[in-house]
Image 1 (cartoon, protein in one colour):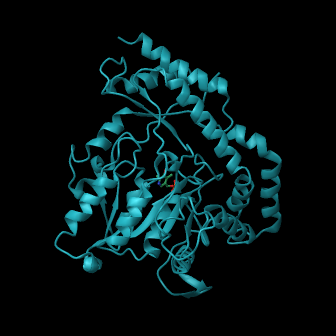
Image 2: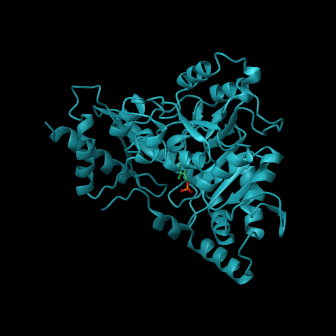
Image 3: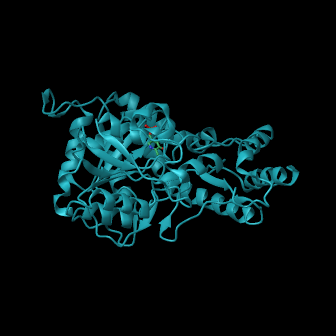
Length: 409
Ligand SMILES: *Cc1c(COP(=O)(O)O)cnc(C)c1O
């Protein structure tokens, strides 16, 4: 019995009739670009994310770039994020002509370290009163909710407000995740839920990805910008469609970045199952974590008390600080091979911190600049995780890891 990282075929089998009908109906209807499926999906997603607006775009990467542009990020600006994320996060920043400013992660959550973020901002603005901070090239914070767990949004929102920075959330791995915030919403829109608020509704804008392996995956590429700001929504809608509001009347230089009608129809079917699938993911995660409780050297994911983690990825950490443990940081890759030989797929998100990537040489970072990210890149391992996974499969993965632990010197 092979255990894949995700099983998209099993998911399709469970919704085959609904999906086939949805696809057929778009083809019969022949309205393939910005038709009724996209419009309806956008309003369903806005409701789901507790935002006023949702704009379907061609990918999660485009969602990030269009959200940044829609928030007014311009060439020469600086945008804060972490080095421990997928390259799309920083790519979107550089594609706007802006520069990523990196802050290390919290080693427990893998999200931006709120204390280090505060220190960076205090350093940067120490000679300036916050009131004049709009003259600084620092214009936005781009927190990533990595693996499906919200970043420390209360601190981020507080600092964003204090230093006049936009907050754009990378929710590519965290659709459906929620956070109990004590900060008021950025716009005066009152969220219907007061305690647990969905990611994407907390900052100025949120960016979603419908890449096939994400919790809500299309059968191709897709993405979305969600926001409570009418201005940001109008900008994003204009930018995705050649910079026009009215056909052939172009107001700004834009893009061809639309979510297509077929993908929207597929995603609308899947959205109806999303909360059930998230609940199943959370059940697998809790089964995994209970079983890992007795396994020396394996740290199950830490879940912050104020966050509702949706486990797009279930990522363990091989504890290198525990020298009694047979698993050391050097053997993470051996454990991977061991599991692979047993037919168990795993993944490393991410094996090389962005500050060490060749493409970012010109940013001038060096090894040692972000020690927590560099340690995490050697110790994390993401295990099979999908709603259709059986408890038996979870047990088999854990047994595979236990077997490795007891047979290594
Ligand atoms: C997947 C992902 C993206 C990009 O999404 P695409 O739809 O593949 O363009 C951006 N950020 C993070 C953290 C992601 O995981």
